[in-house]
Image 1 (cartoon, rainbow, N blue to C red):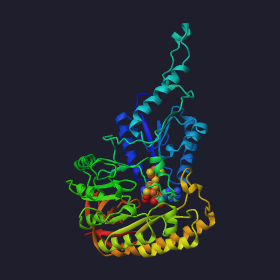
Image 2: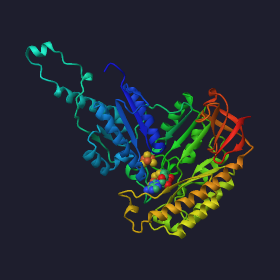
Image 3: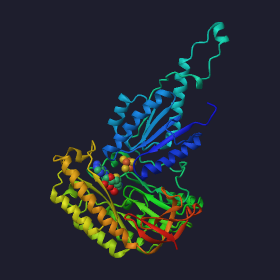
Length: 473
Ligand code: SAH
Ligand code: SF4
Ligand code: F3S
């Protein structure tokens, strides 16, 4: 078309998807695309999430908007990938009612993106050629056919669908375009074997498989050479890292290996399952200068009865003991969590147990979710789904308590001077910089853009509830 093709990429969901999108961007760059902020692009790619129903609804909503854009620009390519595409019902619905989508692929074959895109472009080219008027006689010779890019015909190309159910393959060395120059997520494992009964992730991300430690370390060495000083190790349950490897390495040991990589100054990880969190990990965190003072430890429910129905494989008492041990061994640790309200069969008493755990653990922050029924999961078939109004009321009560406690917890470090990794300009005030403390709290302080990517000491002068105002020490 005489110009570089432009792609708009939208990412839904968690850090896994954010990391996959970095790979998709890398592939796009290598394929010759540039990225644009405008949705009116040559290629629109959505990397989707399906963990809760509203994640799906958002995608369908956006697709409605895209269909209008495509009416004006029929050559626009619309591609969908990510977790939602791993659900056969979703693909069937798209094939039936969203025929304007050109390409659907899943979480297991991201590495094929360029090839699939090429197939779409080829399909489009062939469809356009078939629509060319047959050159015949003198008329054809006199009147030149305009180049394809100047024709405005609706080009009907077949929808390409390539979904793999699962894979035990780990594809290394995909290109990636990182969002930040100084910090990066690093996959250490893929998939999940836990099958919590409410959760769709094991179905859409497949069986758990760990990357080999040498591949992880090699990637982190390359990142470090490229200026990265903070890594976030990613997995659905990092504490079971290594179980699928022949010469099994524990997660705690992997952390120690990452600590040795020159240039890496901060290490984070997501997510820890309480059932697998080892004393060895607590020891490594305790003595480490690099592992951040933050642990995300999803509770889901405080009721042992509900935890059993959720297949979480710990009790309220075991969780409380673990949290107490963490607070005792690492006093400056920040504990955060995920909680689901309204799991089938949850009674007011069960809910009170959840509030009790929140009060005892005193979370530094908590993500609270209303239970969402996911087709195909065991919980979706359970009786006693809790009525909406009751769930909403519980959700509000939980949110109130969580916020009250996290504001008090944030105050713990008021007046202290702590190192912060400067991440960006403040969203609201360009004279301020935004930095992240080891415990994951944000601090805004006067500074200049050249500080971005550096770790600086900041005095935390004023606690504003969930964040700080400060000044460089
Ligand atoms: N592997 C991670 C988190 C994956 S999903 C872990 O085990 O913690 C992130 C969070 O979404 C979960 O912790 C859970 O709180 C929430 N979630 C998952 N499925 C849900 C559902 N069906 N309804 C509501 N919340 C859900
Ligand atoms: Fe879902 Fe449970 Fe796996 Fe987390 S551990 S991804 S909540 S099944
Ligand atoms: Fe969503 Fe998939 Fe993550 S379902 S939460 S993007 S693993």
